[in-house]
Length: 350
Ligand SMILES: [Zn+2]
Image (cartoon, rainbow, N blue to C red):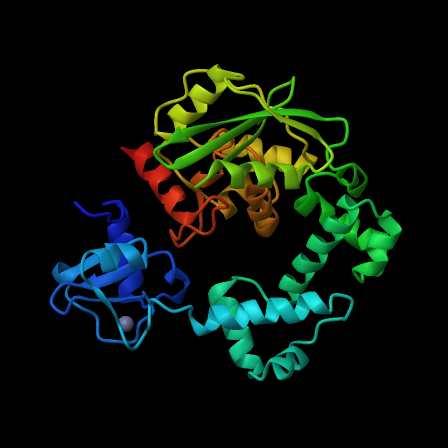
């Protein structure tokens, strides 16, 4: 049996296919048995019958089963909207200190403002302004890690004042800039990697508890992500370290119920901590929406901040951020890949 999508996802994928939902582009592809053609969800072509439709997670899954890419929606090519967003990111990144003006940005790129806004809405779920803010913050973080002073970093990234970055730092940095600047200085982090059916699992810990759980295709890539997150920490591989914890985490990846408590050592703001605690209350097999979590932590309007707290959760699986989905049932993002999120949810439900 070839790689298909989880059975439970199919109903949702079919709805997205019927709705030609561009937000689902990239999350899956559908193949039409009668024509052996596969499409992205937003394809304008006529919808096939349900019984003639198969779903695939990747284009190579579809091609392995003998399906050819549709000539209209070109599922094997990067969609125009993605290209627009990528190019916009490059332009913005080269000019971070400038106040962003969407009309000007569009002109620089040779597209219309409405095409630019549409591409952003479809592909990024944020506005060009928000992307600019995110890029500025990313550069700010990088400058701090490289040892620049906070004042220099603020100046170089076009933040008008310190208060503006502190406003944002809660949700984005997880620590105040001063802590972040230390890049984990003085921290001793040990890590180990293990195999799971969802790929490599990296578990990192301090003396106090688990500080990071990453999922990915290769161990070296996960290790470099860890080093990037804590450039000044003392990080060392330790084979067989805290094997009980690793075993427990891998078992949870495989969909098993928790068997033991895991001590955590997380650097977080008060808000992140509340969100992460709330995530740990979501029962296995269930999901919550971002707005439900926002209500539960007593900040019903802080939906975006909740989404960011989920995205910055350093200990996947243990703090089950994969159990948070969008109100329309869409999976939304997952730092470790949407198909991993899908599979985790699938396993926990069964
Ligand atoms: Zn198509």
